[in-house]
Image (cartoon, rainbow, N blue to C red; front, side, top):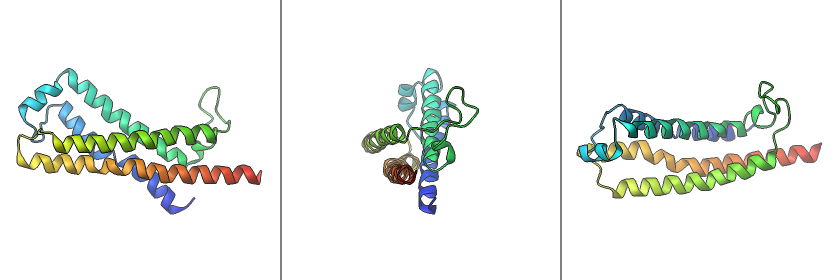
Length: 163
């Protein structure tokens, strides 16, 4: 496995961490410089906190799946998984799903970063910088996932030819 592929997959798993920590902080009521009206609109702390926690955990879990593109469990299901454990993972299904993920994360990150920078959420001047620091890494998610998906496809296609 080339070092660049492993690095790319691990980076995909990490690009969500800053925004996830930011969301979890908002969920417990840390405003991070946002205006009180913005906190009230998000209903945090309160019911909106559930959404923020879900989004942080879900985003990181989905990003973590990129590691399967460079790990053995991305080719053979782990034995502990009922019904499919030990069986080969369908490369075609992985590539299709991952490619859809590339499209979704590229659009999501681009639109989210765009709307975040065009919204007036900050109560404090430094809050805009903090938002940039935690959300701009998401722009790497789609392109890096595309590179790792391409490598996974090439590697699995070559393996099936050799068999």
